[in-house]
Image (tube, rainbow, N blue to C red; front, side, top):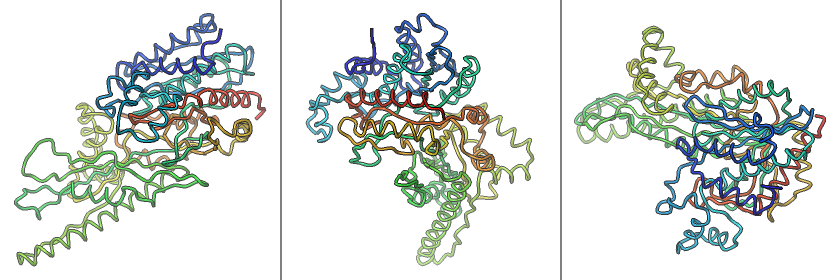
Length: 538
C-alpha cells in the first residue's frame, strides 16, 4: 500500500505537516522532529529497521531527524535535505488563528474584499494550498517522504538518507549540528555520499517571474554590522559630541540598495544589501545624546571572495564617514553664520573589528579583553547578534579615544555561497531532468546556479580558502563562543549539491501558498534526479 505517492496523498500529507505549528524556537519546533519520526514509522521498512530512523539532539534541546533506507549492498547514497521549522505568523494579523489550518485559511482569504488579483485567481483555481509552511518548506518534506517510500520499495539503485533539521529560518543551528551527524552516519553505515538533494521550493527571481526553477547551488549571506561610536554630550551642548544615530543613518544611506554590491554570474544577479536592524544603544531615556548606535545589513554573495567583500564594505564606511563630515561642515557653517561661533567638524575613523581588537590588546593587554569577553558572555544579553554587538561596544568603549569611529564587524549567521555547476555528475543529472521536464504545471523549467532564498545547502562542502575565511572569522566577535562553525566537518562533507522542489508563491508572507499540481511533478523530477545520480559512474 502506498502512502505518499498520489496528488491527494501528498496534499493530505502537506496539510498534516503544516498543522504542526513548528515555528522557530517554539515548542512545536521541538515536537515536529518526533512527529516526523512517528509518521515515517508508518512505513513497514522502518518497523523492520527501527535503528535507521533516529532523532539527534542539539545542545539547546531541539532535535533533528535522520532516516536511512538501504538497498542491498549498495554504498552510493543520496542525501535528502530539508528543514521543518517555519517563520512566525504575526504577519497574518486577524487571520493568525487559521495560519496552520489550510482549508479554513483559504476560505477566510477568499472572503476578503481587497485581495490582490493574483491571489484571488489562485484561490479560484482550486489548485493552491494556503498556509504557513505550505511552500517553505513542508511541501519539500512531503516530497522526501515520497522518495523514502519509493526507496523502501527498492525503486532506486542505491541508498537514500533523509535529514530534516530545525532552525533554518534563524541561525541554522540544526544543520550546523547536522553536518557532523552526516559524517558520523557515513562511517557507521559504511556508505558513500554521491550528492545532496534539497527540496526547497522554486523561488521567483523577480516580481512576475513565472519560471519553475531548479538549482545547482545556494546563495551566500553575511550579516554585516557597523558600530557607530560617537561622543556623548548633553543636548544643550550638541556640538561637543556626535550622535551615533546620525552616524549609523549615514551608513544605512550609502549601503541600502547599493548596486555596487550586486554579485553576478551569467544571467543571475543577487539582491543588493538590505538593512535588518538599526538602533541606538541607550537603554533608558535621558538628555544625553545616543552616542553609540548599530546598523546590521543582510549582504548576499555568489562567487565574490570574502576578503574582497570586507574591503568593499570598509570602503563604503569611508564614503559614509566622508559624506557625514561634509554634512557636519555645512551645518556648522550655517551655525557660524547665525551665531558667529566657529566649530570644527570631527574626523571619523573607520576600522574593522580586528583592527579595533589589535589596538585594544596592544594598549590594555589580552587579559583585559578576556575579562570583558567573560563578562559579556556571563550577562547573556539577548541572542547571538546582541551578544556580538555588546562585545564590540564594550571594546569600543575601552578605546573611546579613537572616537568618533565606525567599526565593521560580522554577526551570525553566515551562509557560505556554494554551487556545483561545474560537477559533471550534476550537469548530467540536470540535463536529464531538463530534457524530461521542459515544463512543470505549465511553467517553463529553468536551471539556475544559486537558490536565492538561502538554504542549509550552504553547509555542504566549503568553497573558501583559509586566508579568505580569515577575513570573516577575524572580524566576527566571540565567534567560537556564540556561533561555532564546523568548518572541518563542512569540508569533509564535500559532495555536489542541487535543489529540486515544488512551486510556490509569497514565502514568509500571509499569502504563502503552494501549487498542488507542481508537487507531483516535482516528485517525479526528484525521482529522476536521484536515479540519475545513483546510476552515474562519476
